[in-house]
Amino acid sequence: MHMKQSTLIRSAAVGLALASSAWLVSRADAGDGAKIDEARGALERWVETRKIISKEERDFALSKEILQDRIALVKRDIESVKVKIAEAQTTIAETDKKKAELAAENDVLKQASAKLAATITELEKATAALLVRAPDPVRERVKPLSQRFPEKPEETKLSLSERWQNVIGVLNEMAKFHRELVLASEVRTLPDGSSVEVTTLYLGLAQAYYVNAAGTVGAIGTSTAQGWSWKPANEVAPLIAQTIGILKGEKVAAFVQLPVQVQ
Image (tube, rainbow, N blue to C red; front, top):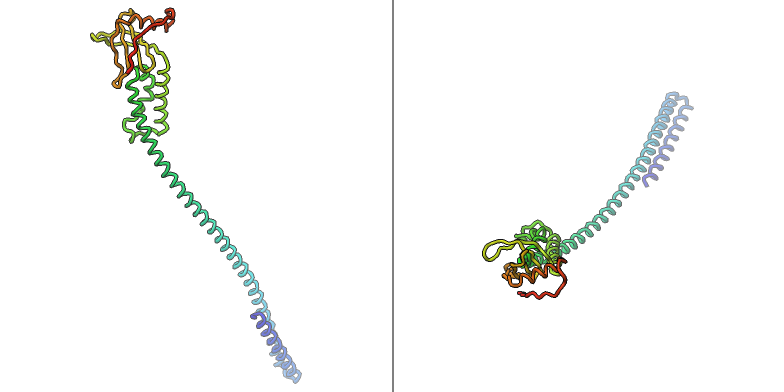
């Protein structure tokens, strides 16, 4: 509508300028030379005015086109930002959901970890009690593991897996020892307070015998809750010495009867 009005105004201006020029020329024919100059000046001013108007119209059209392009660009940017905001909101929602799931899973793991900690603490106590009943060779063998049992489990820096490995390692060694016949050289204190070097035969974790080199001093050992208990048995010392000799391959294999006492 604005462009149509501008066109009509320009047409009216052209008509008016032409009419004025014609009138001035007709007056010039009447011999009015001054009017010719006036008409010429008016025509020149009109032409100049037309040039200015045309330039402004071109500038306006160009500015309008540039402005429209900028508006379109801004609209595209706004749409792009809206899309990114929607994607970000979706991502945030998914992240919140995942966070909630992880928090719930973490709570479950904490509960399970607390139960495992309580279980391993009980196992450490039970295993330590078993070690009291174990013979010296076993305790020495598992000492690197058993000495890592924490005195205050709630303050230990050991992980649950490390504590499990320690307990399992000790129990494995005890089970292995219990399946074997083990000979060990030891020094024992006799009832009279003297010490004697003996060879001890362990029948697993339950029974043991020792005898001195002369075969005159012997004893039978059994496992108790307070440790190993040794009962003098000098009367069977020769039989113990014979059994140990057979195991060492120093004597011919034979059937030897030894007293057994299990508690």
